[in-house]
Length: 319
Ligand SMILES: Nc1ncnc2c1ncn2[C@@H]1O[C@H](COP(=O)(O)OP(=O)(O)OP(=O)(O)O)[C@@H](O)[C@H]1O
Ligand SMILES: [Mg+2]
Image (cartoon, rainbow, N blue to C red; front, side, top):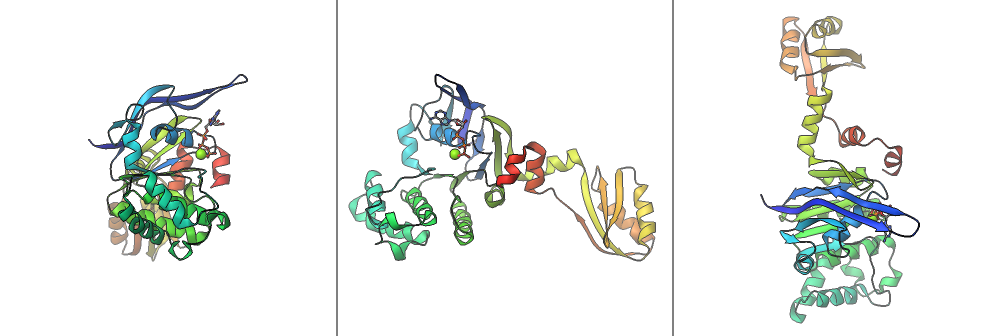
C-alpha cells in the first residue's frame, strides 16, 4: 500500500507554565495516494498543528509519521521538496508584486532562472491572478492573497498539496474557482489534503475524510464506505412515488419484516428498513396494479455523517 500520509500515535503537547494542551493526541492516520483528503474539525481541533508536524515545521512530542514515504522528523527536507503547502495564515512581502513574490518563492525552491518565469506565469494563470501580476501584494484583498497562496503551493508542481483552511476569506466565486482547481489537480493524480472547519464548503470535494476533535481522531475512511456503513448501521431510507391506492401500498410495505417504519410524506412514501427492500416494494406495487413513478434510496449526506460522528453545536454554527 502506498500512503501519502501515515501517522503512528502522533502526538503534540504544548506546555506552558499555566497549562498543558494536547493539541494532537495519539493520532493514527493512513491516507492513500491520489485521494482528496479532508481533515475536518472545529477550531482548536489540532488541524494546523498536525499539518506543521507533517511538513517539518514543528516536531512531534511523541509518535511518528511519514509523508510520501519520508519520515516527518528525519526526512523533512525531502518532504518539503515534494509538498506544496498553503499555510494558515500565510506571509507575503507586501511591497513586492504578485509576480515578484512568486519568483522569490520559486528561487527558494531551487527552480532554475530559465524555468521560473514560465512556472510563475502558469500558476498565476491557474489561480486567475495573471492580470494583476504587477500589482503590489499589500493592496490585495484577503481572497486575492489566498489565491496567491494557492499559486505558491503549486509552484514546484508538488506531488502532495496541503491546504490549511483554503476557502477562508474567499468569496463564493473564489470558493467555486478553488473547488474546480482541486478537481483539476486531483485528475492530474495529485494527492490533496484540505484542512477545514468549513465542512460544507470543502467536504463535498473529498473522497476520504478524517474528523478530529480536541486532538483525537473520531473517524476516518473513504466517504463512500462511511456512507455505506452508516446505511447498514442506521437503516436504509427509501422513497417511493406511486400512483393509485397508496394507502394499501403502505399497509403492505409495513408488513415486510425488514421494514421498521413507513409513512406518507407529501406525494411520496418514506420507508425505513434494515435492508434495501426496493425490489420487494416494486413487487408489491405490481401485484396491486400500481404504477411506480420513482423508487430511490436516500443516502446519508455528508452532514448526516458528520452529525453521527460529531455532534457538538459549534461545528454546525461555523459550517
Ligand atoms: N504554539 C502553540 N502554543 C501553545 N498552544 C498552541 C500552540 N499552537 C496551537 N496551540 C493549541 O493547540 C490546540 C490546537 O490548535 P490548532 O491551531 O492546531 O487547531 P486548528 O484545528 O488548526 O484550529 P483552527 O480551526 O482555529 O485553525 C489549540 O488548543 C491551540 O490553542
Ligand atoms: Mg488551524
